[in-house]
Length: 208
Image (tube, rainbow, N blue to C red; front, side, top):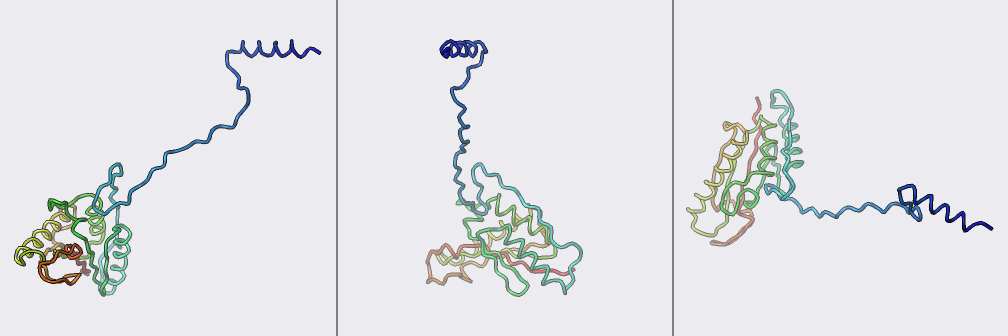
């Protein structure tokens, strides 16, 4: 039997080819990807590495007849719920109210926060021009009533101005501070309650 010379000859030919040959053809190793844990986003707060994309929203075109108000506000409600997450959106008749807790609208220093919430809200409102908006400011009962009233007026005006800077026509926007009246959570006097510190944007149809 001449197996040994043949094996030696095969080994020498493989060495002359310049490319080492594998001992065996193993299947390729599976490709693995690092697991990325995505933190839940908060409206109005930009997440690191997650640039906010402003939606493009266009409501029904053309003039708004009184008979079409209901359907128009139905469409607006759907758009608000689609693009604004984590907020209360309430419907009463043909009026809509968007409730925004203060931490989603303002920084700890009291400045209006740009980014997700403001951009998305402005985009929806720009797409539904046959509406008027009243930005209302509310707070809790902690502190003097007159200071609370002034604070809510200031914050409501600041958020209304931000909507206008974001392209919502100023003629459609008003603001009002309500101080510690109209509490969502009833408390006694001089009580801190985060759920009472909020903005409420009342949206009404304006046929025409």
